[in-house]
Image (cartoon, rainbow, N blue to C red):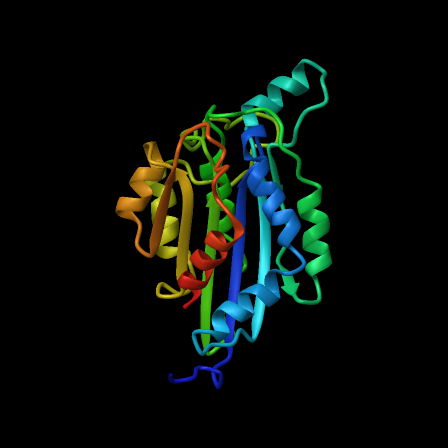
Length: 234
């Protein structure tokens, strides 16, 4: 088998995780595997004759901006609508990712719409590495809910400035904002509904693993996730 070990192979992965109650299985998987992620991906790539020179991981946990604003108005303890980290470099920052993942907790939601498209927008606008001979920029999004339309929560507390105003604009971001067209990959574990269906049929370099709305991806295991990531990197 030809070897690509001579190439500097840089990989950035952004995990977008729906942090509602039904998603506790995915949160537990990511929490339990954070420290070993680097070694696990390296083993998968080694079997393909490839070795990663640099691996970085970023985490985005999302819920609902409108729900947050409503909880704030009612003076209850609100659940943050979006938690976004910088990239963590592996293996040296594995413990930092673990701490960040463990700060996420599943609450509320179910199959109610969430702000998954805003999370995806954050991911697309990441500061991707472009220094390798070969680069791969991978976004993995897990949810069991159809997303709100972009801008649904605009004007509420915490809603970000500079957000894409529509699905068409977000599509343009995917087409034009990613630094290397052939390096980008999107893996969706999401219901076959609404914008998730549109993304899987319209966006290039995307793959969609349909889930049942409200099911929480309970049947999804780590090896399936790892294999999907490795196939996207390869």
